[in-house]
Length: 70
Image (cartoon, rainbow, N blue to C red; front, top):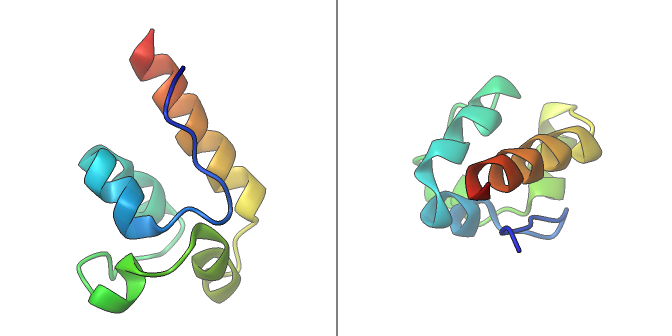
């Protein structure tokens, strides 16, 4: 089973699992990935700050992990 993220997933944990997921956060306007504060946020918290639908980025990241596993 592929790695799965949820709205409660911590951004730093996702990036530690696969640094290539950074592109998804950059696409949503989150350009502060190196900041300790951003790495400690949940995906939901970051989406609220950046005005992005949480479900959209979660779906993109989970699809990426699913395709990567296959």
